[in-house]
Length: 248
Ligand SMILES: C[S@@+](CC[C@H](N)C(=O)[O-])C[C@H]1O[C@@H](n2cnc3c(N)ncnc32)[C@H](O)[C@@H]1O
Image (cartoon, rainbow, N blue to C red; front, side, top):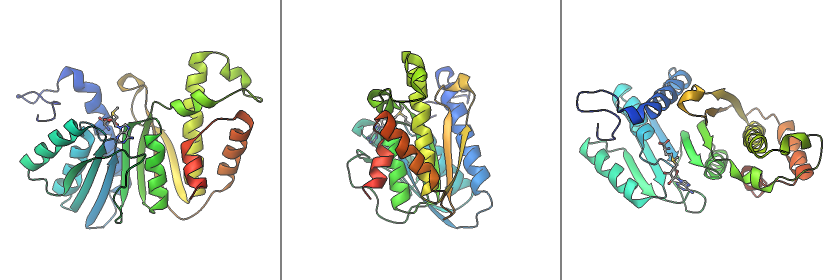
């Protein structure tokens, strides 16, 4: 109710219905992946948490439902939402849940062992910084729903067999978004993650409905990244995750 998703008589606020469906499905997928893990503690970072519907539900799932010692940090650029989310967390006594104002593309983030990162519609390259953080810090679980993949669309130029896909603005935009996420999946696989790319929710609840779900196994599948680099060479696009990982 405090987050504005439910009315006083526990009906879903109409304008929040799609968000409600998204966060429910997100938590279902987290549950599917972690249900059998026996760890008693978990530390999670949420990149671009915004109003933090997902962050609160995840905290509830791990801390209250599963009784685990849970720490979650939600990062966002906006001081007002961070303040409001902090107030709500305090009101519920959610001691392990905190929110920080941070630009995840620039600022120094948590430097302790993190078990999971989540991103739900973190804008454009914020997703790449989240994934790069996960790779560098050996984070075991990644659940990432990208959004606004502008970077490739703005930088790609013609150069090969895929040219036909770049002729019309809408097609180019969609192809660029898919290419972005294909590159991200390849970089994660190259770094030792098993990656599923799934439609996490029906299109009617969000057109931005691809999730990269990844689990660190240590088994590298390295050809994907080289192929992504070759495509980048040919088409001249910029892709932040590739660059961040190349820069170490
Ligand atoms: C579309 S909202 C999604 C919020 C939330 N994850 C959700 O699904 O309800 C994207 C959020 O990412 C935040 N954001 C975008 N770029 C960011 C950055 N570089 N660092 C931190 N937060 C960022 C925005 O302020 C915004 O709150």
